[in-house]
Image (cartoon, rainbow, N blue to C red):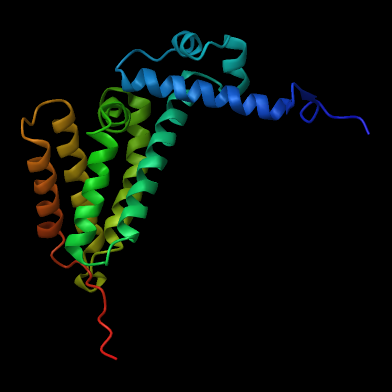
Length: 207
């Protein structure tokens, strides 16, 4: 049987595997540049990844596709971490709020490069601004899961909370809000608890 172009091995790996590795290198380089607040161009990404432009166009049609991939990678990691943290709580509103805020702070403030990618860069980059708007419903859905739907306005409340938190994190990361990290985190928790007054409480098993 003759091996195809994608399954033929070289140095123990297939063409598809090597392509995936190169793509990951390019995405990582794009994230580093975005996180450092540097210009992201095809040339700068290739230089950072130590790959030629030939390999860039092997995976991406243009610079915008790479930037979106870098943003999505960081966003999915952050959302997964928040979901995991919330799932490990007892389900009570304060526990959920504190876990979610704690991980969001760890993902963006304690990791300022990721914060730059997720929160700051989208404000100045039209491509990322549109992609961030696409991701906001994901954050809204996370909140809505814990807001009492009987209130009838859970989606409105969740959307308002998501927008408020994104703005707060942006101002903090850009240095516009000069408060201690702990005070910022506590304020976000209070905002969630106050804004989500109808937060769903876990049911109590009375036996």
